[in-house]
Image 1 (cartoon, helix red, strand yellow):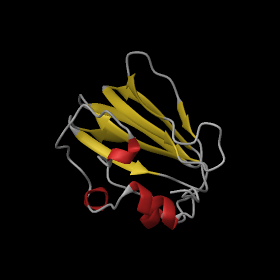
Image 2 (cartoon, rainbow, N blue to C red):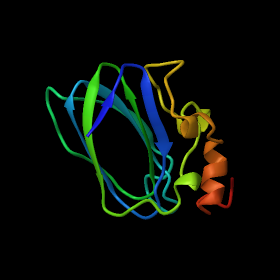
Image 3 (spheres, rainbow, N blue to C red):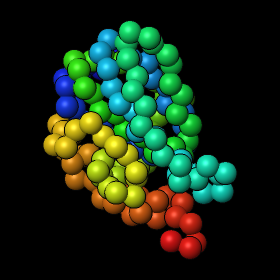
Length: 135
């Protein structure tokens, strides 16, 4: 269980080796998702979705889908994974990288030190060897 204050942003992360499961049990977040799976018919598709504790649903994020969470209210979410992190240092990129295509509701969020130091989306894809050959 994780508690977050408003204007906290977690991510953007991409995992090559496990699924993420999350549910908001109180509060609200905006979830950013981008398909980073080369060869996927929806590769490059991106969206942001508002998720609330008032109408809780479990969100399943498959391997290769880049994701971040921006909390707009005091919030509590429960988070689980199908495997332990293998390469966390290589799985992050800047939350506001324009290549992500996310429309976040914040402009100067609270970030973890790791997320604040993250590089570009393209660099993250290259480290994962996921960058399409035409990029």
